[in-house]
Image (cartoon, rainbow, N blue to C red; front, side, top):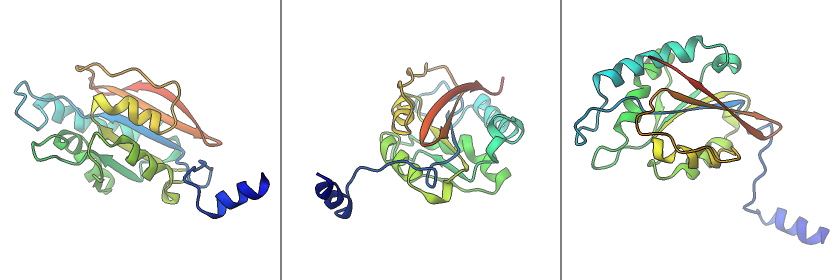
Length: 182
């Protein structure tokens, strides 16, 4: 049995264990800010633009969010041909400018597992803070992929101020909830 286990390890087993060396200290998970009444408009509303500015103050001054330092990476959904994903990027734009950290968009909103694997396996994020702005309907799956158990409930369509802070200790995820803005 030990030889088989060693063989699997040498062959590059797809099972990965989160370790302190690769796990971020915390991941801040938010939803994009308010959208306009016109469902065809892929951009933020005036209220959404205001909330995006409020995010800068929240992230840079809240002691619970900043206990491991400011975010070293900002992730948002990739924009699709019909404009879906634009709001997540616009929500992070003021924070990106303030922190001088680019908004990375490697995956579509329906690929939360791929983003989680990327972040949890990156040694560059070990012990640091990462912020993700995602679509509300995929946030529970993203939180689960980031190690949160039990899986949190779906966010309500009108809920734009919720913040999940996922902290890691010895590779185990713990979820706390906060709110920001007006």
